[in-house]
Image (cartoon, rainbow, N blue to C red):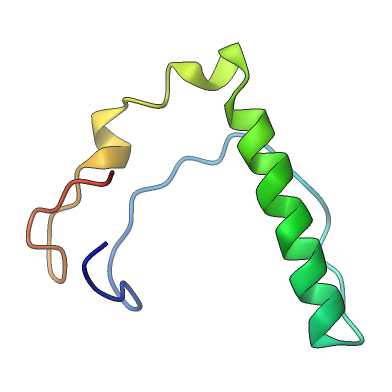
Length: 73
């Protein structure tokens, strides 16, 4: 994205569950789990069952305030 999207509307589709929510004792342990979550999500999205969502226009086209009709890469 060309700008920060904080406060903007986003389109999303929840395709699965990675882990439960935890109360972290340190910022570092939270960051480490987020990195693991990203890798798990990335590998999951490579599966054939999720391939059909990759080109879903609903997820790629952003309209409304703060988006200027941008398309995700």
